[in-house]
Length: 312
Figure 1 (cartoon, rainbow, N blue to C red):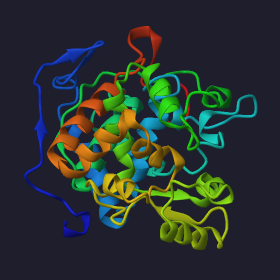
Figure 2: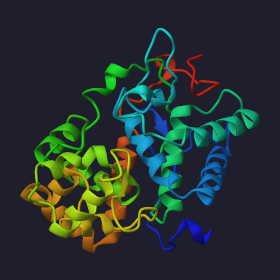
Figure 3: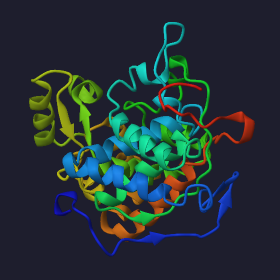
Figure 4: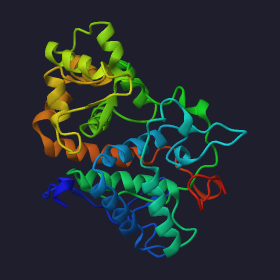
């Protein structure tokens, strides 16, 4: 357990019976009461073996929700007649599908045809945050799985690493997020890495917002190729506020990271989160719950896939 860097004394947000957009905290209480436990066990087992999966599961949830809503469409495999979301350039580096599959198999044995893949993705992201030292919070459930997954849907829906603060505010605003929500969600980069290809343009253009010594670090990373990875902060597997502290030092990896400190519209939030972890934890979990409700499918507008990779 120590390898998971679990931090106790976390902020807990549990709102029993709370409902929104047809979702409910107690959605599976009668049909699959141990659904949360099954998903949590699958995530914990995976992170004990490889803690880097925490960032992967959070990122998967984000990429799922921002394209066609939180409907598990990012899990669907391509076919001869359709290129799915997961084969988009923006999604080729997604990982952790096997964790979702393990949870799904266990759930199908316990309560077949009940728990959606979309809900598993959302629950797995929640648990990944906790097991990496972040806040413990509950999420409403009841999402149905979508039946559409097309590569073209990803082209203009996923915010890219070259967006400035205004572009990020606009992109997130279109989905109902406030500027504060956006900065809090950007804090997910407290976990994980970025590939050189996503930040190399900053080096070519001699970006003045990069600290000189950190620019040398990024250049050294890229000297090994475009797929070489650079951690977003010094504690890549721990959910903390080091990401925001790095922005203050102008050591943000992506342009879309560093712009949050450079812009007057968002700098105050970066400074606040850097010094107030409790506030970051609270705002992050609220924003994650909000994100998990983007364009959810209900009733006949979705299905419960028996295999997360294939439409029924």
